[in-house]
Image 1 (cartoon, one colour):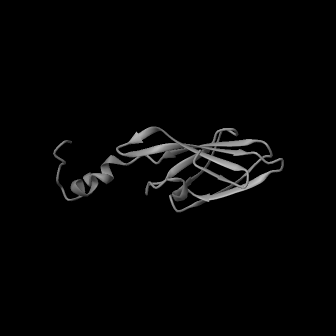
Image 2 (cartoon, helix red, strand yellow):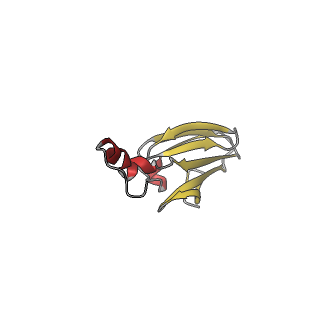
Image 3 (spheres, one colour):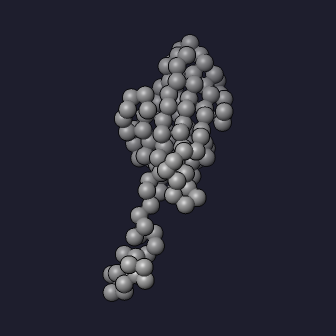
Length: 114
């Protein structure tokens, strides 16, 4: 368990895919109360700090919720005595941009490992 506030337990677990030292995460929220609770948090506060951001998917509803950055806020309902599960998948790094290959090609230089 990562955090427990007002009867809501938050669980965070690293999962694949992993790019370098950056990882995706599974997020679980358990509501031990009888009534529906609103959960709101900033990703960075749960340890999700990748600057490229994450694509968040609601696993119970089988749909993509949004693309968010580490300083963005998520808000959703967790039903009474229920749970919510999400997958926060890393935005895949663009190897051409991150290694400056596009700039090299624009400057008429061929990358050495092209």
